[in-house]
Image (cartoon, rainbow, N blue to C red; front, top):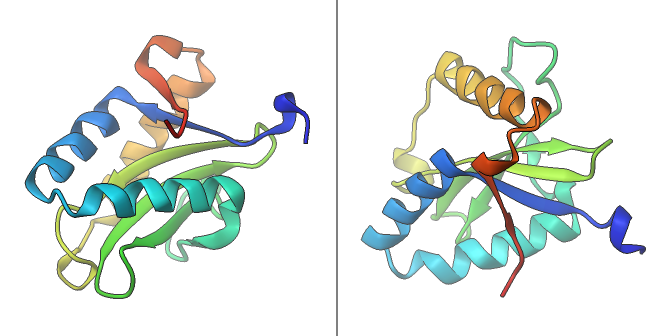
Length: 131
């Protein structure tokens, strides 16, 4: 695959701060987080689309994946297939079984990240390079 067609993972500064805080509190999660980023970058459809998204722009775009197996954490991300871009939205601080989210909050955060990306606010994003 040519470099221009590879899938890129761009992390918004707000999300990076949230992920850093979660990984600081749960050090064992770091390797699982990195492995999951590798996995979704190689196959963005590995995470299923969230079903209950009322915003038509986000249907099929907001996806979820497990980080650390069935008892692990939840990663929510946007998959922009036309641009070949993955934009993480959230890494849950608690395990999947204890993780609850409000759909309205998720939609609001997704739209804010998507708008920053669409408006070319590149300074708000860093590319994950798997180093």
